[in-house]
Image (cartoon, rainbow, N blue to C red):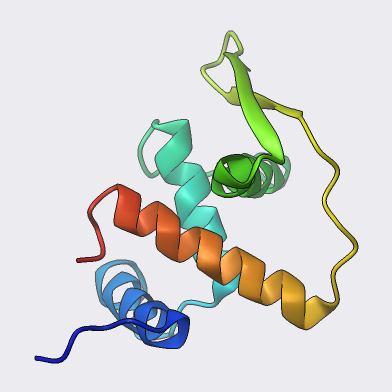
Length: 118
């Protein structure tokens, strides 16, 4: 099997794996993957989340995903076990396509770091 090297190839592989594992037939999109990262980082397992909790999960995920890029740094866990991050550097003004590439790259790097993508 040829080595997967491009971001697109890695992204497609990741979406395939995650969709097969977590989605009921509908292919996951980038927001769905970010949500899964948030659930993983919260570490409380899969459960029903309220709307505001879902937004907080997305925020946790984005902070975690962009932490290696120097934008955020883990700060503390609150009394409910939710992680909090502090902003180190403001995100640059990126065009929507550039934002998507940055997030896809960060997501692929995250899943490689936890050995989900090999």
